[in-house]
Amino acid sequence: MTDQPILVIGSTGKTGARVAARLEAKGVSVRHGSRRSETAFDWEDPSTWTPVLSGISKAYVTYFPDLAFPGAIEKLEAFTKVAMDTGLEHIVLLSGRGEHFATLGEEIVRNSGLPFTIVRAAWFAQNFSEGYLRDPILGGVLPMPGGDIAEPIIDIDDIADVVVAVLTEEGHIGERYEVTGPRLMTFAEMAEVLSTTLGRHIQHIPIAFEDFHANVAASGGEFVADVFTQIARETLDGRNASTSDGVERALGRKPRDFAAFAQTAMATGAWSAAA
Image 1 (tube, rainbow, N blue to C red):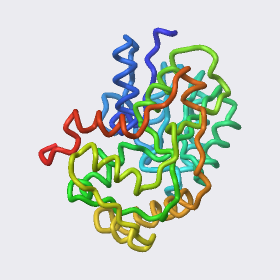
Image 2: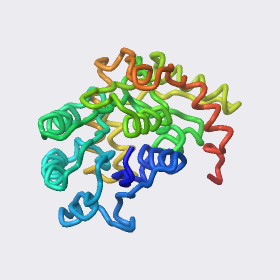
Image 3: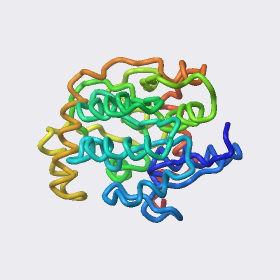
């Protein structure tokens, strides 16, 4: 370990906030990388990149809202060049499983000359408790495209644990950890688990990708809907219908089950109407 702080880009996001909190709990100094942090970071403003990387040896990098957004790959490539110039010694990239643009982002990092680790993640369980599916679940429904496609959905607490291990332990340079949950589940099966946990019926409603687009557009606009619908079409075509051993390789334990995620989320009030 080094006395230098670890940079967490996206430290207000789902994974970044967890990674930063875990590092700080271990007594590690963290430099938060967000628009509102003490040393501000903005993907849209390259003038913020050098200051936030100055005096940093390790960095956890996420691209909000997704590497599939137009210009994201080009910005990531430019960022890695700045990171090389500032002497970064280890970059950890969060990538998406089965996503074309995420794979391009991985290649940028892999070919950057920087020591790297890639964490390639399945769909987040926390989308049900903190993301765009929380409100529908509060209303008793789970509307998702993809039909009966099964997904090895992952608890992002596991992602955070993997990232922290990668940043604070030896032996992870050059690794790609493909992290998934321990089993394949259809969205109908996820709705059954949620029904049991919440004590009321949550109905899975199979919808077309066009309806998914309309739902996202209603809350996030057409541009966001275009990108996320394309990601859903990519990743919910069966290509991700397998589990992987990334969590076990990185941590020496099995990943958390979706049912355990749901119980924890329920206990912490994630589906309280006032939350």
